[in-house]
Image (cartoon, rainbow, N blue to C red; front, side, top):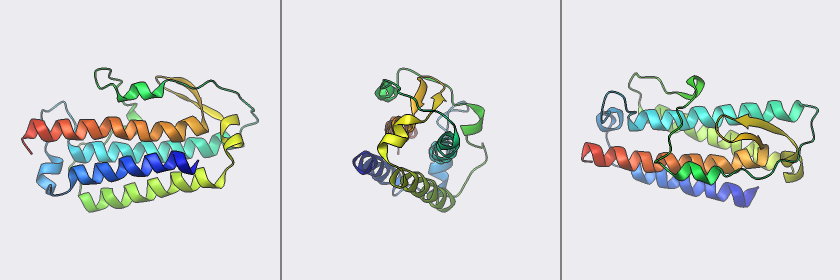
Length: 166
């Protein structure tokens, strides 16, 4: 699990590097009305980590012992394929402060990492919950998926910066 979480940490660091030097107005600016701002992307990542940690904790309570083949969630890096975020992980439209998001992301990241550290990989592989696009995934896959999901959105952040000329 720790090796897996190293990737999560590395991608998160790249996200912070990508947004460093941007002010609140730039972070809250949308390239177009139907697109997210960088702040909204960051809030979405926070909401996702919270949901994944919550669902993973609930999955541990289930009387199940699954064996699920590895899902191709690396495909989430392909930005030409788009899946609309479910409503519960869509960010609010109001502007937000980076400090608030940074704190919330630190908390959600720490909670997911703590969850990963607290449980044996065999246990994590024996419990699952469904992903909207990839179907049933075990908890170890969910933890790994988080880094790919964030890397996808790192690409989105870089795209937004380019669109805004930042």
